[in-house]
Image (cartoon, rainbow, N blue to C red):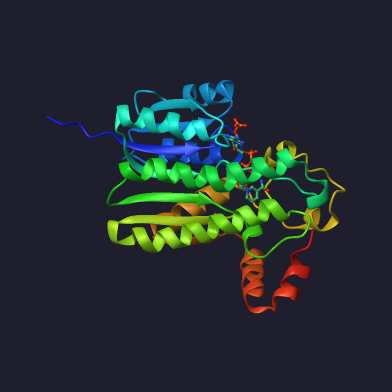
Amino acid sequence: MVIVVASAVITGASSGLGKEYFNLAANNFEDIDEIWIISRSKEKLDALAQSIDNEKKRVIAVYLDLSKEESYEKLGKIFEMHKPDIRLLINNAGAGNLKSFENLTEKEAADTVKLNALGLTMMTKVCLPYMGEDSFILNVSSIGSFAPTANMSVYCATKAYVSSFSMAIAEELEEKGITVTAVCPGPMETNFFNAGNIKEGSSKKFFSLPRDNPSKIAEKSMKAMMKGKRMYIGKFYYKLYRFLSKILPNDLAISLSKL
Ligand SMILES: NC(=O)c1ccc[n+]([C@@H]2O[C@H](COP(=O)([O-])OP(=O)(O)OC[C@H]3O[C@@H](n4cnc5c(N)ncnc54)[C@H](OP(=O)(O)O)[C@@H]3O)[C@@H](O)[C@H]2O)c1
């Protein structure tokens, strides 16, 4: 007898939006038997794993820095051994800074690209062979993906990559029964601000933008994903921003998005 164990894989599950996704997957997805949670912080992931009833779902914490190439190789080898049946992949880990390109250090610029763009791509590459019909990929992008954004140039360029990549593979994978959804939140009060050293006063415009609520974004984006939507945007304000960024001449859209 073959027992099929359905798995979810969530990156950046240790805090903010990723933690919300973990709680939803743990409590609302009856078909999921085990959840792989991935980030750098052992302590936070272990605490999360212990926070749910292990009888209901098995949680496997993997401590990886997804900005490092060797991490995908390591995860690839782990999956080769376990051969998980991945029904849900949530590529959520991400980080960025709010400052001019000149003031961004080489490490900050490189790490942002490595984690947000390369990391997300390679996670998808590593997981895809273990995914089949009726499975889902949720890629966390941002409203920053809608237009080139001065003073958050590298971060928003990586998120433009995430949205573009997601919509392209959504088209490719549709015939395999795999749904791909890009999630585009606005600013959320999470550790994102601390991690990117984003401080009040660094941009009046950024701090005056309406805040999205991570728990609402997680719940509603998962509903959109289940309905087969290719992109989820929360507030009407940000839907309008996307619309404007598509119809305005480039120069105007870029001056509108400047932070
Ligand atoms: N907050 C916002 O304003 C906002 C707006 C739009 C989009 N987003 C996007 O939403 C997603 C979640 O961010 P959040 O707001 O929830 O921020 P957060 O609280 O800082 O969470 C980021 C998560 O990513 C993980 N992570 C960061 N660097 C990593 C690395 N090198 N390797 C592996 N994991 C790493 C962190 O875990 P460890 O520290 O344990 O590694 C953490 O679990 C990100 O993709 C972000 O770009 C955020």
